[in-house]
Length: 117
Image 1 (cartoon, helix red, strand yellow):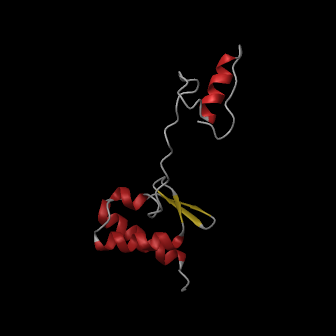
Image 2: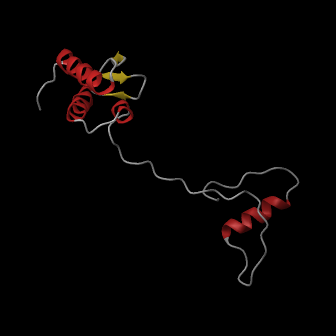
Image 3: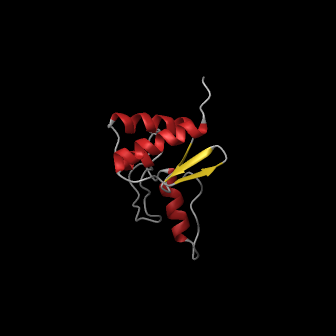
């Protein structure tokens, strides 16, 4: 792994960014991290990759400002509303349904146990 020179990488990025977007980028420096135009913090190696993308003309302004591609966050399952109307079927209640029914019978607000709903 080669060492990157901070001043060379940043000056090359500024030149490529200005050529692609027509203005100089606002680069905020923190120890080991760089934020471009108020975007997410990225490492110097990622700034070098963005320079290559901007130089080749494949990247857009929004893609240059955001952090490099990461794995997409898993989509959370949509939760059911607590204390929905439950009717008993032939086999009886499921564990989740039993908790909902028991807590709905109480005269005060209760939370469902962890892992339910």
